[in-house]
Amino acid sequence: MRKLNVIILGSGLAALTAARELSVNCNVIIFTKTGRASSWKAQGGIAAAVNEDDVKHHAADTLYAGAGHGNERAVKTLVQDGVRAVHEWIKEGMSFDKDLNGDFARCLEGAHSVRRILHAGGDQTGKRMMEHILSTCLTIDLFTDKKVVDLIINEGSCRGVTVKGRNGGIEHVFADAVVIATGGYGGLFDSSSADKSLAGEGSALAYRGGAELEDMEFTQFHPTLLWSENKSHGLISEAVRGEGAVLVNGKNERLMAWHPLKDLAPRDVVARTLYENVKKGIPVFLDIQCVTDMEKRFPTVSAICKRAGVDLYKGKIPVRPGAHFSIGGVRTDINGCTSVEGLYAAGEAACTGVHGANRLASNSLLETIVFGKRTASHIAATVRPRNINTSATRRADIKPLKFPEKEAVIKAVSHGAGIEKNPDDLKELIGFCETFQVKQHLHSLRENWKLKEVEVSNMLITAWLIATSSLIRTESRGSHYRSDCPVQNPEQWEGKKVIRHISEKLIRPCFTEGSTEYEPMDTETNA
Image 1: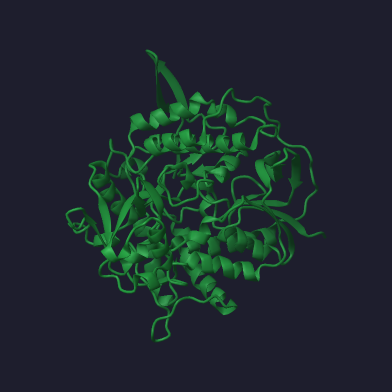
Image 2 (image 1 turned 90 degrees about the vertical axis):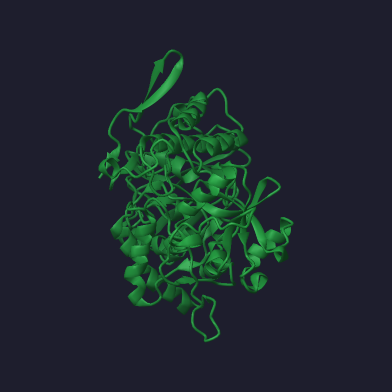
């Protein structure tokens, strides 16, 4: 029996964890963009119940932060498998920071009830973990010069991907399994900790391929992006607040004094509090005067400040909330399986339900190594080599008449689907996407499109999915805040997910006196 052929899209920690596991007995090909994945930038550390007696508390904290929307089975899997995963990495030689007694230097971050965050190199945890896994990977074919323009779907099964080189050449690459690990869609927002290239490619590819998406309305905003000269310069880790930094306004008044958890309240709460000040034109700062050895303990943050011209010795860093983590994504079970045979997803591109409506700080790195490995193990144990079928679902060879500039999409998403949403702005964003015939993008053959057009197409599809999903969920929960319905609506929404599928008749246009109104058509919430 021949080896399995597996294609992985992405090169972050989830992708490489899956690749390392699979490469022992499978042929693995990675398609990724140039540049570094978000995993390299992860500052906050990895949340892990290194002591077994902390497992139930870690699970409880994760569910609490998730605002009653988390999948308990997925959360239990995350924290239990996470203990084993972290110890395996340590056994392999991964080094986490120690205290003066030689024990793990556990740190505290928002909504954690105890110190359980492990760091490496201070605020360089993602970088150190990426370096470690790259040093332990077997030989893997990795391509950065070929852009994935589509999934190959045959009779409801994913059989590979269609790629296009920079010279315009088209290639159909077949496989027994395809794993989407492309990261999130934070690049759709003007103020974001994510690279602008991370604009929902995985979500758009999966949706076009017939996979279900889940909870696209939930986007987590990090409270503290360094904000200077009217732009974001990078993330200021929550770990800085964990070591005593506090949020203040221009009058040096503490902004989070009202909350029981103060500056370490859940991220959605802190982000909205800061946003209220930003809306009023009130400057917001992170006061770091009580943090000792700032440059030594937080070298990445210190370097970001230096590049932005912010003097740390003045004791205050100007900050503003920005898009940080995509909670919604390709719907999967705890083994990475999507609703399409042969298609899997892991990491930020996937939605297992583990984060609920708001991710607990530093659970993201844990998620990548836990579910990246589970996905790979499931593929290796259950998938069998199959005959290559060169046919694929036919698509209409029709190209939309025009495409917006990337900057225009980012501007529209930032205005319409930011920290605080309302129906009018969401409808305006939907209208923007449909002006550029987004529904035609869902079914068009894109092989002959320019690579830039494919990228913008993915952005439009993902933006439309975020906006329509946000319009459907008529409540505020976790990272999803609607100004017209500012509280949770448990009677209608408790335990309900917004599930999206390309065959849906989710939104219908009703034209009244020249305007376009949108209303839910079919029930799209699943218990």
